[in-house]
Length: 143
View 1 (cartoon, helix red, strand yellow):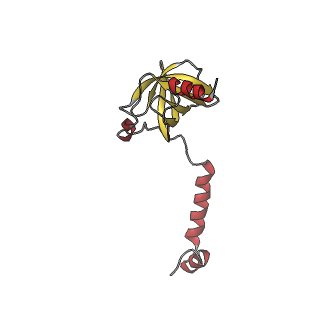
View 2 (cartoon, one colour):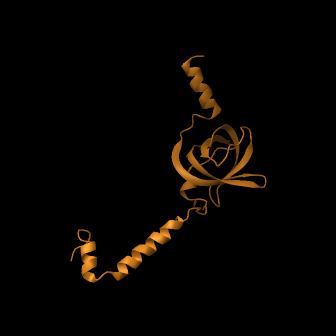
View 3 (cartoon, rainbow, N blue to C red):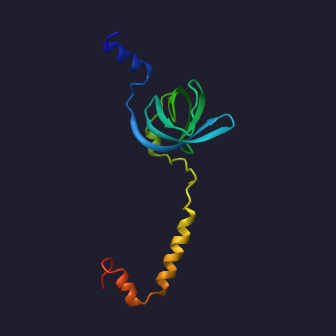
């Protein structure tokens, strides 16, 4: 098979569509299950997605990108935490310009020791006189 026929097969398969690199939060739905995912690139025919766990090729899912943008997809390949999905119908990328991304609740919280360190600094700074504070922060603030 020569290079032209290989390229023709790729384009015919839909993988040759122009891709838009981005980082967009989304949600994959499969029956009663849902998973927060990150869309890494997208085209009119599919997308590459990072997910918390592997999803087998051939799985039929629904990808939600915003409150108004949701589409059925098929997993074409999966490797580790990344997968490629194809859209059942061509996707208009202009829809993302008018969409608000899915909001995913942050799961980060400050480490427990951060509060203790902050409290220790506050106690120390409260005991210093203005002259001692000036000396402590010399070079960081100006009069």
